[in-house]
Length: 169
Image 1 (cartoon, rainbow, N blue to C red):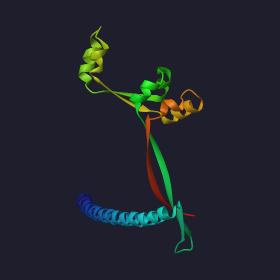
Image 2: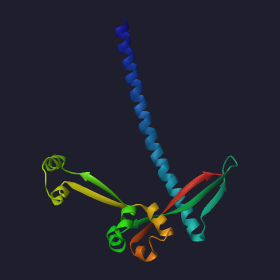
Image 3: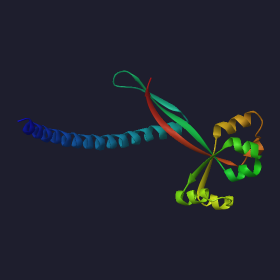
Image 4: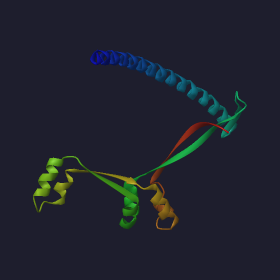
């Protein structure tokens, strides 16, 4: 008797699970459509703010709560590592450049490590090195005078993005 009821329960659970899956799919689809509509409305407000040179717009909501859409400007600094390497000394470069080394052919790497007296050039065939600049450290060294403005001029680009945020005040 227990076995039969267990089968019935799994069928019910499967049915409930399928219904829940369909509900989740429907809700995600509706949420996606609502988010698109919300983005369109935010874009309209953003265009208005741009024409008036404003950074935010307030409105009174249905529940008499104050709502604000705010434009937040964000700038990302992208450095030209090759140019920085030409302009900065090795000590400063070691402090601001993060290196990530990835072994792209592990078997070959093991073979090289087992053998002795192989040139570093052969070892580098197995490695992929990526470099990135530590923006925080650049700022610290700039403020302390270890990096000068002339070193950074032309060695970076600014990528600006605007985020539209709605909040209740």
